[in-house]
Picture (cartoon, helix red, strand yellow):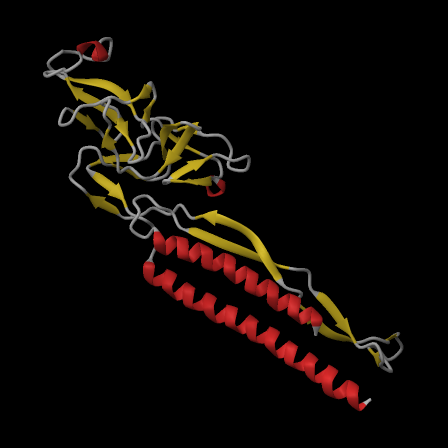
Length: 283
C-alpha cells in the first residue's frame, strides 16, 4: 500500500515535467525558429511477485515443483529520462524584409554573444546601430570572416548563404577593399554566413532568446561545407514547429494522467485509514 503511494507520486512528478514542456511549447508557438521540447520517461525496475504460502504447482510430471508460483510483475514508478529538442523543419513564412533569413534544411546560424559563440534557427534579424546584422537582442550574426556589416537596401544573400553588397553605391569602400569582385560596378562578395551543425543536435542546450549552446553529448559545432549547406532564403522566416492542436491534446492527457495518479494516492490513504481505524480496533 505504501509502495503504491510512491509509485503514484512518481507518476505525478513525471506528468509535471511533461506539463512544463507542453506549456513552454504553447508559449512559443509564435516564436520564429522555436523547436518544441519533448519529455521522455523510463520505468523503474519491475518487481516479480510470487505467492509465498502455497503448496506448489508441478510444472512437469516428474519435475520439480515451484513452491512460490509467479503471480506477475508490479511496476515501481517512472522517472524523467531526458528532455530533448525536436528539430523538425518549421514552415517558411514570407516577410519581405531583407534582414530576415530562413534555413531550409538542417544547420544553425552562428551568433556572437558575451558568453561566446551561440547558435540559432531564428533568422528574424535586424540592422544594428553600428551597421551589423544582429538578432533582436543585439547579438551580431557571424560570417566566416566575422560579424557581417550591411546597409539597408544595399545587400543580398543568395541560396548558398553568400552575402553580396552593391558596390555601385559603396558607403564604406575600405570595408569592401580586397573582396572578390570582377568589376567595382558589379555586386561584391562580402562574406558567407557561418552555418554550423552538430553530430547530435537533439542534445543542444537551450539558453533562452532562441539561442543554443553545445554540450558534451552534442559535440562541437562543425562548419557545414559547400554541397551540404542548407538553402538560405532571404525575406523569409522559419515558423515554430509546434502544432498547437497537438499540444493542447497532450495537455489534456497530462491532466487526466495526473488526476488518475492523485486518485490512486487518495484510494491508498482511504484503505490505510480503514485498516488502522477499523481492522486494528477489531483485533
